[in-house]
Image (cartoon, rainbow, N blue to C red; front, side, top):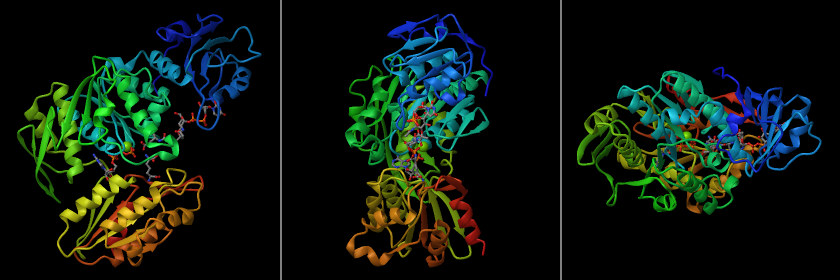
Length: 490
Ligand SMILES: CC(=O)N[C@H]1[C@@H](OP(=O)(O)OP(=O)(O)OC[C@H]2O[C@@H](n3ccc(=O)[nH]c3=O)[C@H](O)[C@@H]2O)O[C@H](CO)[C@@H](O)[C@@H]1O[C@H](C)C(=O)N[C@@H](C)C(=O)N[C@H](CCC(=O)O)C(=O)O
Ligand SMILES: Nc1ncnc2c1ncn2[C@@H]1O[C@H](COP(=O)(O)OP(=O)(O)OP(=O)(O)O)[C@@H](O)[C@H]1O
Ligand SMILES: N[C@H](CCC[C@H](N)C(=O)O)C(=O)O
Ligand SMILES: [Mg+2]
């Protein structure tokens, strides 16, 4: 991480409008923290009410470690006089503003575009990063797969990192001379204030379908979380929404940003039409221009259109944009092919981990497969995550496949078999004979490959780029694509 010179607390609080400040703000701060375990002198601890615990309860530990200042919602007792207390209405939001100020507001120093939506965020930000890099700009990327500072790759831990990490990464981008940054904005991040204080030039909405109900509890809350990203935009920003999704227009109801729409089906500022959709790519009419691209499936026509529209809104040349776009490939683990040349079996690794994504990918495979080819799907559902999508994903898999193998996908703290039982509950009565349950994912993939015959397609869904299988708190090395390659090398 980049070394940051210390700041005064006064400078960090500028523009924050605290409810109350007790003590001096003329103190040097060399780190903004929200985890008591990092406490020490010359640091400010922001006590955030989290999902598991309330950060306020760790204030005694921070005092013991010699913390200089506290940002809190509730004034704690027994705080020594020399420790400054700043009371705010919302600590999580304050954390975003402090982090931005600490790193000298990096989001103001480059053009930042955020992408939200249940599916398509990684694909869209990766295409934007590759496109703008191809157009000759230095760019940054924050994504589920990886973060990038120009060409430097930094491992990613979240789809959207915490507020301090976001600003630290953006500051590194500014330092490296990046002009653009493209980031995924997850609904968790919006809800937890991880993006507070960021100055977005553009915000894209791809779609919203069933996911994360473990966290948001209702679909309405989930919609509201995504919408509040658009509510936070400034009037200098643009919002770009997919209006073929029925929640598209809801997103921008209360935004100050200028609203632009994209669609494959109706009138909109940005339109595209599919001329041909094949296993080698898409032939589109985008904005009345002919386009050939290497990405596959109707859902990628949406992703490509969103990326094209963003480039136009950022005043890039239309023809040059389409030329660059036609060269781009999908992000890692998204409709990623492995071929068994000997047996003529095609395997596809895809990160479809929601019912809608699984349906979109299987619809694409069904439409593009050879007439007599069978589709074999290997799929699981994550543990400690939305349980309600489990039966639906199994049902979708059965609807569009000849053979389904239900298996594990990061069971985390849950019993793998129990997750599979919940998936099995969604198997339609008439489909039972086409379903096998194999807990060990490697065995499940191998079985699908062995059952496949010449011309068939094996879909391995849910883990995409992931390089691990998380079981009971341990991340075991695991890579769908490597297992397929190994299987096909025999
Ligand atoms: C459920 C959830 O989203 N949790 C995230 C959240 O944690 P939290 O603040 O609720 O944590 P908490 O344990 O309740 O602690 C509350 C506060 O006490 C502090 N604390 C805690 C313990 C201690 O000893 N001392 C201390 O100070 C913590 O630092 C925290 O500030 O805020 C943390 C910092 O930003 C995140 O790392 C953490 O992500 C967890 C690890 C996670 O797995 N999140 C997933 C679900 C997630 O965020 N996924 C989305 C992708 C979703 C998508 O596909 O769209 C993502 O953006 O990655
Ligand atoms: N525009 C889209 N609409 C529906 N499904 C899509 C779309 N784009 C991609 N998908 C499907 O969703 C899967 C995940 O895509 P991607 O990784 O781009 O989404 P994401 O929003 O970043 O997911 P996450 O929330 O896990 O970060 C893909 O592997 C594909 O199956
Ligand atoms: N293979 C994954 C996909 C998770 C996608 C992630 N973004 C989330 O839901 O947090 C799992 O369920 O473990
Ligand atoms: Mg993603």
